[in-house]
Amino acid sequence: IFEWIDTELDDSQVDSIILWAAVVQNVVAVIFSLPSGYVIDVHGLVSVFVASTLACGIVSLFTFLMMLKSTTVATLFLGPGIIIGAAKAFAYTTNNAMASVIFPPNVRSRAVGVSYNLSNAVFGGLGPAFSQLLLPVSILGPGWYVLVASAVSLTAVASFGEMLKTTS
Image 1 (cartoon, rainbow, N blue to C red):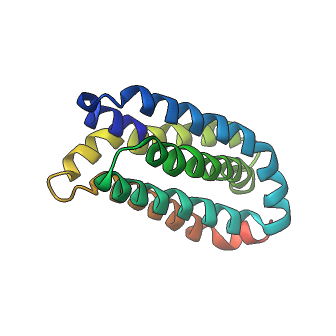
Image 2 (cartoon, rainbow, N blue to C red):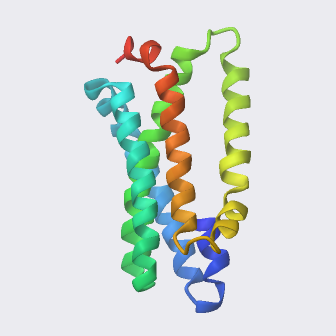
């Protein structure tokens, strides 16, 4: 989200606020990483991943809806900065736990590395380009892009559902 917002709103003098919102998001993700392990142990791996992935997708779309009305500090900090930061922490920790279930130990390191880098290239690296391409279709294009990426993640978890439920 922050990569695209920065390029889109560069002329409106909010780029420094966006950078601070990105910092807030990463700090919140670090803070929530430790308690997320406990929540995963209590509520199960799949349910926490589904909740955090849905939160990322829905809040991203909601952030762009809020930006249609105004671009205030509260819009950028409360939406993506804090809520997505927390959801991102839960999603990242569940990814690591799921990788240990899905891949056998002898290929786990390579499999996690390939899947992580491939997903970052497709969804992270091309995210700003896809978001920009979606703008003529809808002003909410970047939010829809994150929502579609969340749906892809949920589909992947559904395909491994039975394997992952045994660990929850």
